[in-house]
Image (cartoon, rainbow, N blue to C red; front, side):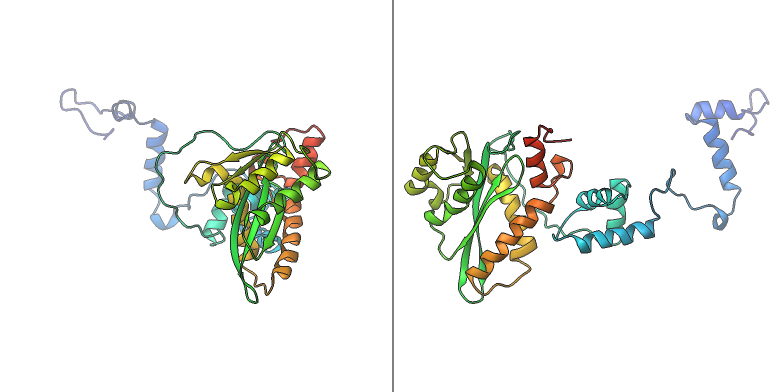
Length: 302
């Protein structure tokens, strides 16, 4: 086009005028012109600019596979893999880890959820200090020798640590209190009237949690009952998220014969989770580490 001759003036249009009319930089025009002069089979393959990083793609994939194999948990995404690599001194971009995990089919499968209507609340359920709010909930699993059993959990809304974990054949209000009793004894130093005053308990509207016996026990310990919104599981999201981790890493991958066998496995899982599970909003620190840092005056998120 720049070599074309104007019928009015008899002169060439010129590269500057053509690029101005088409809104194209002259450097781009010269680049495209030079690129077209190279046969397609000889053109260089475009690659991402910048330094390669701590390892080549092949080496980094090997590190990713090793981290996934060494982790005691299942279903960890690219962010936790990236954080574990950093803890081991292998520094790279999180998006690079994400790309490599996607290309090598290392991502955890996810099931698409159902669309939700308007939410009943627009706030947050997390807290800035530990022992301000605990969430509690219940799920069921099956043992080969004793049939269906009930698993009760209690989770701190600040540190995400599991403060109580209990399994029983029955799923009544008295069993639902046990993980809270465990947490109160461990973090408040005993079990007495008003010993845990100032702590709120987030729970759903199940019959065990709304019963008079459960509510009276909370009042005796000085705990404040904080029911979540009806049909809004996000309101008890901390306990719900922990139950998902518990299922993916224990209840769905191992077989238990008795309640006693499962109870022993739950005690071990609680220790492993609190010591080694990484929390994104706490700069990939474990629940135990977050509590220690907060008690030492370190901010909850770094």
